[in-house]
Length: 480
Image (tube, rainbow, N blue to C red; front, side, top):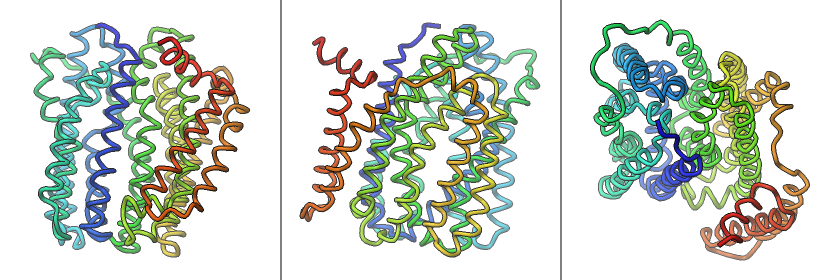
């Protein structure tokens, strides 16, 4: 199979990520004001509950499938057999997940009251299974993924403004969110015939997938605990109003996390391929670039959001959500932590077959998150949940770095710390100064502050000739 350009893949995935950011940036301010904390909290609670059943249906395939497909992508027959085996397992698990879902929804009184919302949200389960995104990522089909996703995001955007007009329209909001996020799954499923042989094989080897799939599944379980348990615990221990506040903080975090981890998504199949082919030098080089990218991008983003947390909440969610400001400030550093652990875990440990170590790190994070949630949520609500998440992400990263001590000594980033901090200090001074400018418009204040901060930061990196940014500037600007 023809190898795709990493540069093209990154551009396509960056466009996809940008659209995933633009969609909530356009819709969330509108939805927050129409539905309020309770309405958005209802949908967030429903999505979080359904995520547990989706996790069971997928059984670790989203990550394992990328590696499995990437390793056999040059052999269409073996690729077809692998995809069929994984899809059959997924469909079987999906049926089990739906049975458990229906029993749960009609057994728990608080869930039964909101059963319509939960049933609508559960469409995500089947969409995740038939979407087979792991195949398209493993084959590096990012141009297609980007195009079809953009189409459905535009459709969802139109539907959002057409159908969501009052507080009781939160079910429409849930359905439209699924269309925007998973509508492409139907096209992915019917497009399978162009990528693999659909004719059934006489013999399937399901056994070879079970052990690694369960390892990835266990990783997903632990990860879901500390990424969704905070929402569920907040809803059960406090109220859906608190969930709505917390969701506002998490939305902002997720927007930036998706950008920071966009490069890693592209690199996973290529890193897996290099490792399988024993191309150690290329493997180390890609990992080094990924670490450098995260450090350069995530640190200034965290500083910007922490300084302007209040204005960001006012712009995206409105005055009703001002109580979420402490949660935003507390949870923002997780952007950097997740970016780094995404590389150390998903981009290094997983391709090298050490996913069990990732599982251990995530389990430790889940334990820390659960304990802190029990202590902090009753006292501090959404801010307490944010603190639990921050601590969990920190623990995950530290544990992974301990496991990777020897390998990390070989994979050194190209970051020159003097360049980074030498550029950040003057930019941060300007940022803090901009915070006190007498500008009434929240949007204008955020825009001016962002432009000045990132402009000074970028110029500082260029003046000090930071390697990554300078190579981009030299290649695409100076050589024109």
